[in-house]
Length: 17
Image 1 (spheres, one colour):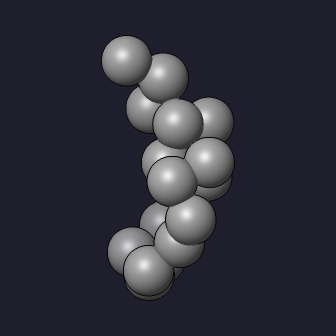
Image 2 (cartoon, rainbow, N blue to C red):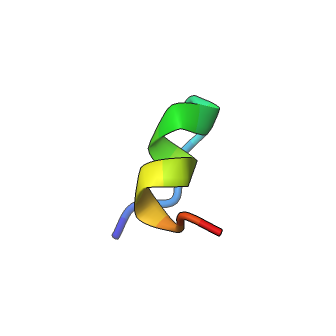
Image 3 (cartoon, rainbow, N blue to C red):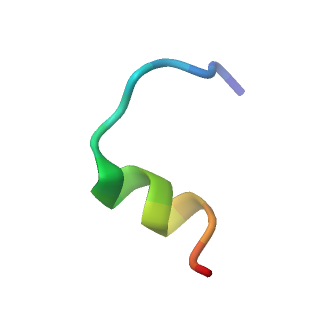
């Protein structure tokens, strides 16, 4: 997994809290 600056939408998909 590459930790790069991504939009919040991607973060929500990766870890929906």
